[in-house]
Length: 612
Image (cartoon, rainbow, N blue to C red):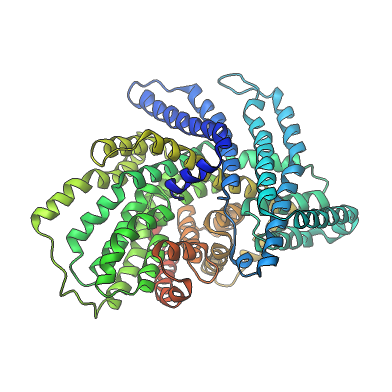
């Protein structure tokens, strides 16, 4: 999660953005209030607000598109910068210009289909408010237009005109050439999949094109050049991928992470754990892992977790002789371990995409995370066998009691989230608003509160990050549909179900695939792209949905932290203030420990299902 203060500074440099940011902030607040009002009305008064879900659905897609435009302006969309950063300065400038031209081209190509899609939806009425569905889906066309303005403005400010003209000519020439070879593409059949949906996407990734637009370019070129399918299908798939009411909890949990950062509730938990076990051998490593486990169950964001825990613990760990590389390695793998602890955004999205019970994923996530936690604890203890704790002082009972009092309200929150879902008080979507209101109230009266200016900045930051995440979801849905309709899934299913070793062999292949994709695509896009393809195969082999989901998420998170490509690895290095080349050697034992845990989870299905 991006730093709110940095975002506020960025806002000050672009005041012309304030109308869009104000709308996005208002939509975030409206969705939160409506979801909470629905919980209170149904649970307290027994009067469900039928119309509120419809208003939330309309507001949600408008929030997504406005947030995506803000994220594009702030350059906060998920992208792979590893290869671009390795280029010489002049080549890097050209790659940036080419990336900007490719993004603009895709947006312009999709503009007309988005307008046609909105026109077609005029005759469809919403069930509760009887409004034309264009009121909702019109946000896609407007969002695309806003993003065109953002990327063009950015390109004119940051790239040389000659680079932009050359890039534009190259793209136009390739587009014209591709359209003239339709007969050739048609004859290739399924071979178009590796050309467009693998090769083209990979090239765009290497050029630093944001991941959402990589997926969109792959799907648009595949459908436009090698099929007769109209591009309105892409808009329809994007609409379906971004509109699930289940996904409304994504921006609310992002907002919750902002609240925790601003109030210091996460730091209170860290201080409490340090007072209990910080004085023993490997004590600070235990505190780091335990803090990530608990804080992850509140914020749902790995970046927020690491940014909360590292500043509070690293100074003392350094004093005890821990090397910065070892601390960052434990920080990174600890964050990967904790990503199955609810309310994990990845679990919410996976449940929505694969049709798996989110409540079941939440219940299973605790047990699975504890298995990985145990693997890391054993390794941390072995590594700390020579640690010098002679200067460490055990906290007095009075100090411990003081930390308990301060941390107790924060420690309640993970259990509040889980019990609210388990007891049926709120759905997995609605519980996010309950957690936000609780955190705001507790933060105001106990942890110092949040000023109005900072509160507004948090709402805008939530919209931007949510838009970036959900646009990836929409584009990945279009790409996954293209792959599914090509017929390649049937061939893949036939191959995967005949692998040696039955379901165990399939699990081994799954772990390998998601390790690799976790490195290359970041966690969420990997899930979005492959979950609709892999889950039907797993079901044919008799694998429980929850069990398979846990294996996917765990393997993907390990890949996310794997050097030299894993994005999470570099984020951890940045937060921990260590050089990546120093951390690479230190992180592998921890990654091996996590992989052992992943194989145990895959081999014993009852670990994932025992809590159901």
